[in-house]
Amino acid sequence: MTKLSVNINKIATLRNARGANNPNVVQVALDAERFGAQGITVHPRPDERHIRYQDVLDLSEVVTTEFNIEGYPDKRFMELIKLVKPAQATLVPDPPNAITSNSGWDTITHLEYLKDIVAELHASGTRVSIFINPESKFFEPAKKTGTDRVELYTEPFAVNFSKDKHAAVKPYIEVSKLAHQLGLGLNAGHDLDLHNLKFLKESIPFLDEVSIGHALVCDALYYGLENTIQMYRRQLEV
Image 1: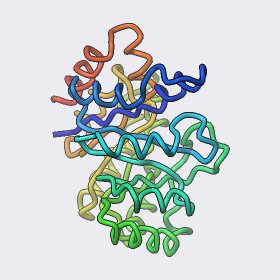
Image 2: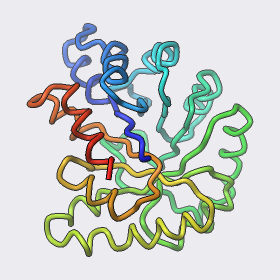
Image 3: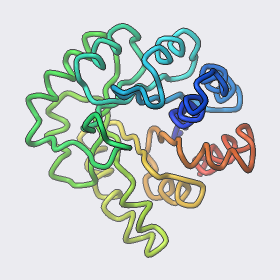
Image 4: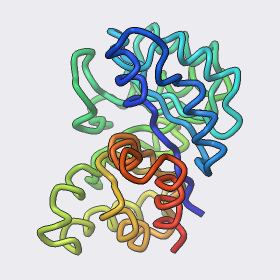
């Protein structure tokens, strides 16, 4: 079964626009779980433009599904993971000023660095996932880091889905088979939505988890949060 982890960064963006506590990030996370989310994802950035570090601490006290914290493994991020001990830490190579994740790790160049980071996170009892491009050359080095999972960067798939969905998904099928052979768990995220998610799931049957935020929150404006989460869950039940 592929789990749905709801990324609530956009909820925090909306809250921060007015400077108060509406919408309440913690309450939305609890509601999302109640509505069927099987995980909650956050990506705190150094400038705290959406999720704040205090949000992470507050959420860690109440989230009962899988708590996934994404981020660049700088000193503050690593300290946060060790303190919170989430179910999963997803390592992304974003610079501090990036608007959103736009590429996976070069696991060849950064092999030794990632190996040290993964070992440090494992020591705190956290499962590790590495954000990665759908290129086979990065997967064996990823395995050598000791990571538990890789997260497929799916923006290229989403961008090309409407042009030729079979061509768009082909590299993902290839690398997912390689990840499976290497014993790596498989996550996916970025620009997945109600139009392309089912096809991705059908094409990659051993997908462990998807993390979806922007599209899901946008859909919730029209369909409501509970209905939207159930709609996304149904896309994964194939």
